[in-house]
Length: 343
Image (tube, rainbow, N blue to C red; front, side):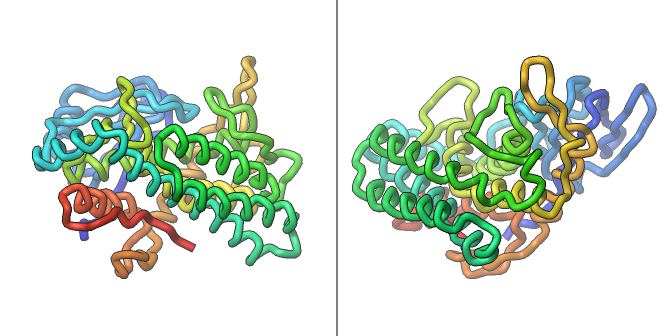
């Protein structure tokens, strides 16, 4: 299993990234504020607009370090990568399967079932751990709907049918999401999923963590030689990493949603860390972004027993492990893709 290296998150918007020998250097107003050897990194996510020098970008390409640019409020802008690597036969197989609606629907079914199973596990965990503090009836109703949708999805034949059931399941899951927020209810509430821009504090946090997750999944797919832009559930669209979005589905509830709930319920974030702009969108302060990133990095260092590999691995390697298993399935080494489902 590959070694878990670090992802560097640059949260000060005025930061400029440059190169000095084999080191990445961050400058603020021409003053050096941070330095790290490039071999210690596997990815860089820059929340700002100043950018990076051509020399640094070239070094990232040479060392296979992913470099993503995100707006200060967490909107993905773009990603720089070097030359395409990996097995061309694997990518050709990926393209052929994606061209078939029937084969794409089979894979899409697995992604969606993994997502809904993990959403249901989030609800069941709340019932198990906080039975006396939550609206148990409402959460059990949503959990029952998800269970029914799993059976419907298992029988669905087309991508349109699958997307319809997935949308209904998402509505049932998010209908119960507000009941999972146990503290600071006056400032952290959830009525529905909204984005571009997020209209409340919880949606702002969800969107931000989804961006962090997306970076890690896209990097994992590129590492194993797959094309992150050719998907099966999410179809081709210029500039959209469709396969990364496919693989992301199974991880949203377990890695992103649970982290957001924990940060709120443990009072690691507060209302003062959020600002509403003139357009009604909610932005996070630098300190809040740093708090979330710190929690995200800490979570990635924790070990879990992988349910298919039956190995203890860091949580941060889950995207890589699943990308590797997916590549093995496409090559024919595995009869099916063992989607990640964790309780």
